[in-house]
Length: 522
Figure 1 (cartoon, rainbow, N blue to C red):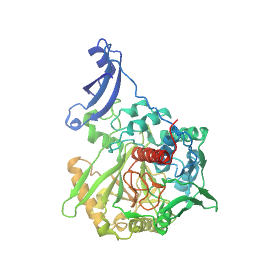
Figure 2: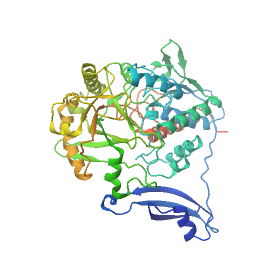
Figure 3: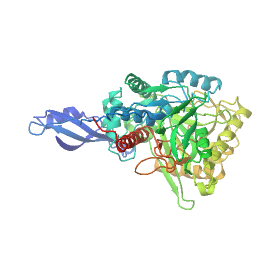
Figure 4: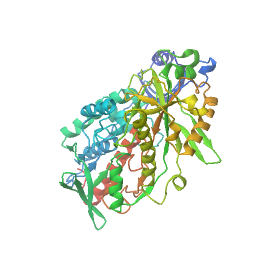
């Protein structure tokens, strides 16, 4: 099994040299976890890396984890998976490893072709409703921070990381505390995963939109496509992502049990990357052994019981226009693997409360709340720009409530920005909580409020505004047998890794359903 040890080294020390110097009989080692502690760097103390390492020695060698999957002998039913994001793809992969081939349907195009649509949107404002930053092979995760960090606890996390590495991710993602692939590497990995599934017999239908579910007597029987075709299966996985609003509406009309869910809205804040590196690392900023600096900030207002926090931090990244509807603007953040953009950004968002902010007894009330903000942003863009540029405001002006005059600012956004009063976009409680939080963040990270800081709005798609209810044990819809809500869009994940893990969870439940139906393992 090997022996586990904990090691703390200055950031500029070499772990390999340390291990072989300390353990003369070392046969090999495996890094289980690696995390950077730079909390005192801005006060002159060297950052350190904390390692958990498994070492192999003559009397205690290393052993690799091996996954053995039993295959279903006669899996006649072919599950339909709606959505080719991390949840849908990992559901298909895990089913395949148990001998069950699936049909994967996605409204958008393949990852390589998505860039053509997205480039037209960013440059000319030409939005494709089905192939965009949120829809298509890989889902919204292909244009995001690219981080694989997750706060969930699951035995499937290691499986997901190993599979990511198998399809091209660097091996270090299996042990880094904050594993990061970057959007560029994610696209290559997802493409390889899809190609593997196709080679092994899974059927993919891209550019194919599901517009309805087919069911009777509270049991699923298939899906209806936009072209009028019907696909039949007693098992349908809904892994449509958090922006498939037409899907939520369809499910509501079909009386699938759902519930309104709290989420968060706010802005993207962008600083020069060098500034954030300096704030976090002090005199060590720019050292080759230090990653691009990140931060995580939060503030809780006890009176309102609302949290305001940083989300999806993109060091050395870009602020993207990520809308999916003609009359709405949305921001998101993205980093490539190198994290070498001159800027660093993060969402700063305020928690919503469905009972106060939108009609909580209306399942789709959160969607209407989001759309209202996105529409105001679009209307400002139409009024002061062309309708594609994102609203922006200097942080200092936002805090001081200044009237915005003419002027330009440089940002990372490929869609460009225009200066305006972004407070007009949000409800009063969002503006008030953002201002309060920024003041606190500047105490937690002195220098955060800086003349170079730019706010870009609005950030509204932090998570799903609804939960598609499912049984906690079987993961099946609470009122439609055979329907499996899955991933972030269903309300059960909050990022690439947790979505992939939920896909594995759902696949495991489908395997159990096959066994209960009389199928057996080979």
